Length: 439
Picture: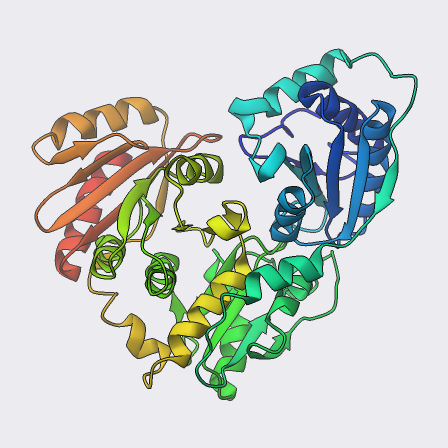
């Protein structure tokens, strides 16, 4: 059990760190902590997700709460179900992009408000460890089954403004992208890859942050004729994109495109994570939106969105958050927004993103170090002549370049992002900073 209660979710290897006995206790602790009465629960396609569901449902109902079983579902559908059904809480059984031997849970309060380590996961862990559950009620809760997929699909599809037929290739990764992509039926033509559920991930890890996982999609794109390609992660709360040539588009550039599409119909606040290109802020402003910078991490972003009634937020990891899905992710809506943009232009996607890719980014570079706090403090002092802020780690902006350094929540790592107006300066500044970080 050690180490499965994380900063944003619960996750561990099935049979070693996570089993049905522990799942039952987590169900009991979840109700004890929230004092909830109506809990929406769904699960992904992993072979052990259904047994874990049965155990969690037993724990929840033992404590007197009712379970609404959504069945097999993507994480965005579970978030929608929480808000749409007026539940007190929700829980989706998934280990996202982790390999097949892993499983876990993502937890929410009412209205799909996430529960993180700081806002409840550690409290739930303590209740589990101490077995300090609330007394069992006289009457256990019930389990009922419902599907909210059609309602979810209807709420997402209303954003479609397709001006001409759009054809995409979609890597569904044998996982929950299979369900999530059904939202797109009748809106875009989909040529799918790996469209049979298999929680052992026989073809590749379902993680679009890793460029090597795009290989099969890129091959398909280059052999056919498509407007763009998409790759879903394991629970379909993230999605990556390629242009019509199969070239991977950085996820912050997609944030800018989606912002452009949404701002065409409504002006408002749009968040972008602080690792994003300067171009994202510039695109939001030029389309009449109000750009606001967020720290990294879905719990922080969702809260900032709620506080500002933001229309949308994009994160460099491929999470795209929408006010219209209870301030949570919807990968199918992200695809629709890109399809709207492509269908309204006579230019291919590669030409549409070219002017947005106006700066040069290092991408996130991780360095293992012994003393991350000391190193970041040293960089803060050394670069204090720039525009310095500490929203998440240390960010410093200069006239022609900027950088951000952050510590990992879980490992002795420093994460570095650098962007500059020229490639030569980006490389020079990147190497300069890495030399200081790595000694």
